[in-house]
Image 1 (cartoon, helix red, strand yellow):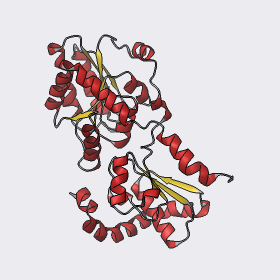
Image 2 (tube, rainbow, N blue to C red; image 1 turned 180 degrees about the horizontal axis):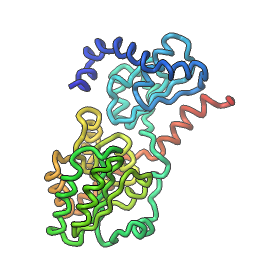
Image 3 (cartoon, rainbow, N blue to C red; image 1 turned 180 degrees about the vertical axis):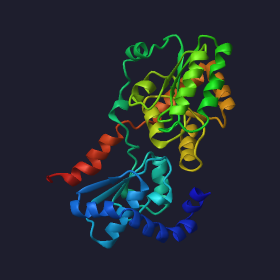
Image 4 (spheres, helix red, strand yellow; image 1 turned 45 degrees about the horizontal axis):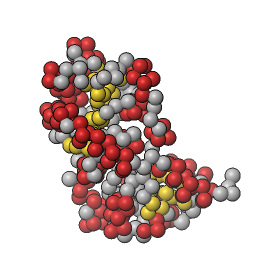
Length: 314
């Protein structure tokens, strides 16, 4: 409700003065550092520093070029600080909404949401499968739910392992629990008792490899996760979406045919089963994912908006 209320013109107009005062107070140490450094370019990938920097530009002491990178596939009004010099957004659709909300077209750059360079290339799948002890004859489902392993992960995995009885020797699971130690311990026990092969991880820095070797991603629709999966041509099933930005991220992918939504673990299981019975649909989703991908967004941001501004500076 708060997300939607603040995204309405009237609600946003009432809350903006309070928000700006609050952000200015919370960002006091950060702004003092910026005042001392006076960077040539500042890239803000969250609306909190974007608003704080906009205040500094409004007061006249900050002359840095401020580039705001909207890291979701919908531009909530909190992101759209009029003092920013440029906005980087994830798609032409997001650009159109920004224009409707009063941002000049010349300041909006639909380069995509920047992701790590490693997601631009598929890994050596044979080597990764061998290292992870994956069966090349089985399809691989990757399950992630943010860095904290949020949501009904345990129930979801318990539902999925029952598919071994329906489609024997067809599936294997890669489950990333993030920093949720208790969840990892629980799923280690599930894996030990399951006839379906399953690898359980804590926090990982090998997501490009895990995505590259997987056939389907089950995930919360965070903006970066979505763009990473699209770059790898990985179809998605969304669960446990946070109302607000994650709902819009999921809607974008689903609308373009690269993902599906499932409201609860039992529905996720049914959706996976349907895709297994209709492999052509999964193939079509892979193609649609690749068509939406913008894997070079970070490079283009540097070449288009940072390098020209910093040319000739130390």
